[in-house]
Amino acid sequence: MITLREISIVWSLLHVLIIFGTLFESRYSRKKTALLTAVFMGPLAVYNSWFFIRFGPELAGQALLLNCAIPSVLFFYILAKHRDGRFLFTFCLVDTVSLEIVYVTGLLDFFLSNETHLVMFVLRLAAFPLLEWVVLRKLRTHYRWMQADLEKGWGGLALVTVLFYLLLWVIYSYPSSVTERLEYLPEVVLVLLLLPMVYVCLFAILGYQEKLYKARTDHQLLEVRAAMMQQRVEQTTQAEQSLAIQRHDLRHRFQTLGAMLEQGELQAAREYIASAEETLQETAVRRWCLNPVLDAVFGSYFRQAEKEGIRIEAEIDLPEEMQVDVVELSTVFANALENAIHAVRSLPEDKRVIRCRCLRRPQLMFRVSNPCAGPVRFDEDGLPLGAGGRPGIGSRSIAAYCDKYGAYCDYRAENGWFCIQIVQP
Image (cartoon, rainbow, N blue to C red; front, side, top):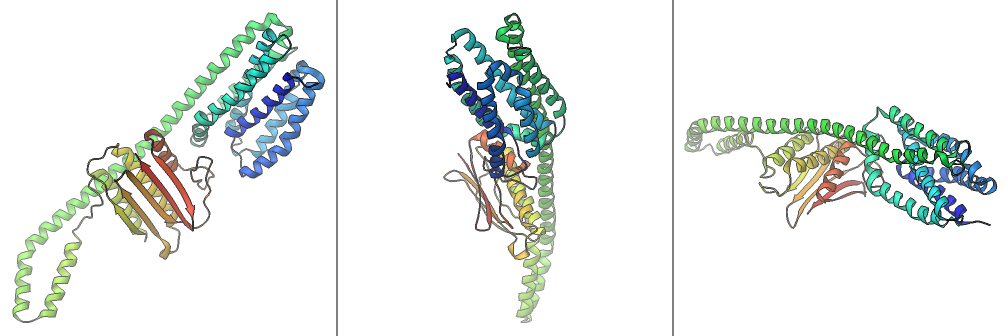
């Protein structure tokens, strides 16, 4: 007869697979990955459930590596995008945390349930969905960004998780279950307490490494913005110098124009006026908005686009004083415009256009759209995937800004156009 213990085993196996799928990055599409996983892991889960029921928890625990862990790691290694320490760290992370839940609930059940297994069933029924929620809402996005940004240093971290995996398995299940070797219970409890503390430290290290990476990226962006401001200052200085020359020559031009009119040379006068107007236009520096930092960003990227034969259709209404951090907001604008320029520079000349609209009322709204050559794929969070199959740094930087300030960001690709729209409360 199937008892609460058997049901909790199947429940645990199912949720371990779900949690791993949340963090795991496959080289194949989600549909193909799900299909292959169901074909392979479904029968494997059924087999392990049968083995547990047929031979009992002690033998099933001892055969865990052979029956479940090794086949699973080989299968997912074939599917993995990152076939290095990142994959092994992810696999062992999920399995060791899941084993922690299984072992803790098993021990509590041994001492409290009196063989009804009600404590085990209730605790696992609550613990695994709670762990899924934490992983999905608090960990998944940043963990995947860590894997994308930090390509080195995972080997040592993976080795730590592998050793913890083996340590948990040996100390709890070998040569028999710890429930039959209660003299070893203090050691088991210490290891179970040590595991979450080690993972907290490991993720603190990873978070620190990611902060260093972002700091380097932000420093590069600051250098770019400083270069933009310098270019804007140089343009304004050159315009002022040209205008001073034009003012100096204006008296001579009036005399020349007056002489033409006295002699009745109207057509020559018109051409002379048109030439002078064209010369004056060359001294103009277009202001896109009143805020100097944002104006420098728009001016720099619009000028870059025009040099590459990209037509700009812009409507920008921003005040001089902003209610948000201008430096961080300028990074959002810069990333969006840079992505748009990269997307259209390879298109035919008649399709190279970027439409930019920015309004301040009723709330700050920024929209950039451009034609796209082919279909655009998005990840689970709605971020566009780049050539490497993951969101680019620019898209992730925009997402981080929106998370920090509660802004709404929407990416869309339809009817041959790609669009990003950001609404800032």
